[in-house]
Image (cartoon, rainbow, N blue to C red; front, side):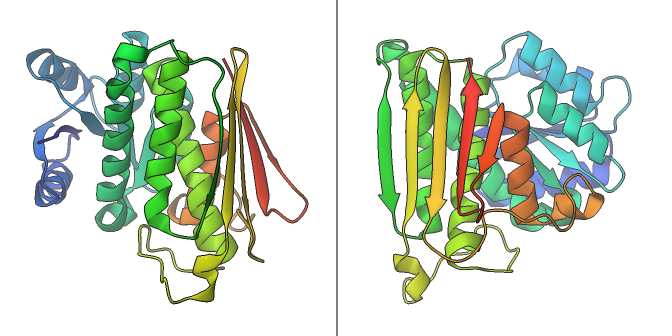
Length: 282
């Protein structure tokens, strides 16, 4: 059973997150600030951390900074509230692996934690072969099934780990950006959905299901290059609400763009926004 540490100075919010995580089948503990979180991690091995941003003593941003500096391999997911968007942006820049708006807690927390746990397991499985894989390149052509998103991104984590590229946290973040691009290509590119229910099952009876998504990856010593494209008439991303505004944090299509631009060095779209090319320099 995976174990998740919840960090929040609000007992009400901490208990809500603990309850959601336990109902998903995970062990969950709670502490009230970043310093307590560091102490708890000294006593128990956690598989993921979910942290609020505004806290006394050591806030969420400082906690992320501390864990990255100590090369901790546990993914950190930060929780954002209206008014703390700038802190979330800073936390992502410092090393957080994903974020969940408080208003989307019931729909987003479980799939985001699940994805982060999958990436950590994929990284650990490659420990015996770390650095042994030489310049991997691969290409996926998948139907528009959102269940394919995490397996493809897991394969990317394994490839990066096998090639010895970056830290474990770098690999989680590259995979998170790629998963966001694939999800957006399926849900908003091929299905042209305006539904914001993250993780909703795709419909195999819908003609859009047969529209392809193509993922091309090239891992080299200098950088990793990833392109994601879709066949549908929709767009991988959108510009309204404007990126960085409070509203954009709660729109999944915009949230995906924020993860891509936060974790990759270059993010380039074609003119129709049916293809994105992302580069991460090592």
